[in-house]
Length: 277
Image (cartoon, rainbow, N blue to C red; front, side, top):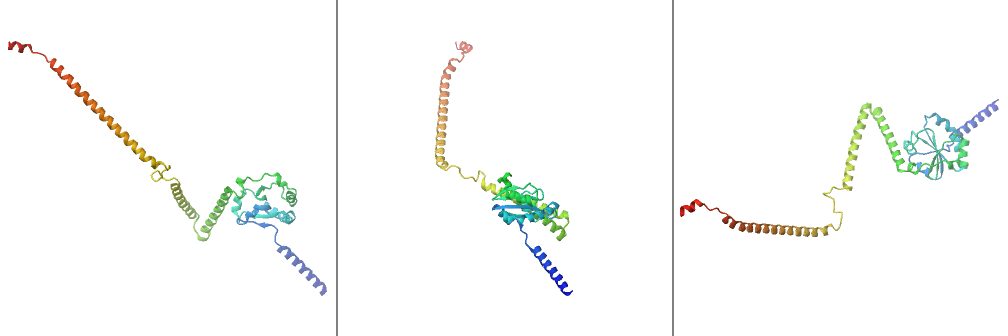
């Protein structure tokens, strides 16, 4: 009886050890973050974007774990991203629905739209069904400037949310007070940004008073232009003097011609003549 008890205890211990080993086995699914997402640009990947509170994501997890066990045989990396922990990646990949699965092959990204079972995932990789899907344009790719800006915007929004929570919950500031703080911070940052833009605009496009000469030969032409202007002024003054001299001569001549006529046309008084006689 004691031997049977010992056997049962040993069997239970072995089962517990096996279960603990199974539970302690690391998951073949890799976890990506804002700092490691660039690994997707090299090799072949299947990435799932999920949220812990999403029911569809929770039902997909077992199939995704089973599919990850085939990753080494298929020569593909299986990864996942928690959008609640990595909002920057959510904005970089424009995640609008959960779960969202992307196939990545040497920097080309394609959105997976098929069934979500282990068999379908395996066939998608082994039969290279991803070749029939149009890749995402380079303008909207995760490594583009546009998507990098979108990622920064998502990170900023999450940071503002954390700050709002800290101010209202930890510090005890009322909600309206937190909003007022963010409004003042927005106005101040806009003022600083405006001043910086004005400074840059003034440096890049200076005003006419401080603008340097655009043509190197303008200084050589300046003395010649001044000489020509001076010569034109002298000629104009000489012409004016000639005109004034001519006008003066005409006046004198007209005066001489008019004086004899005035003498000849003087009337003779007949009464005075008769008295003299």
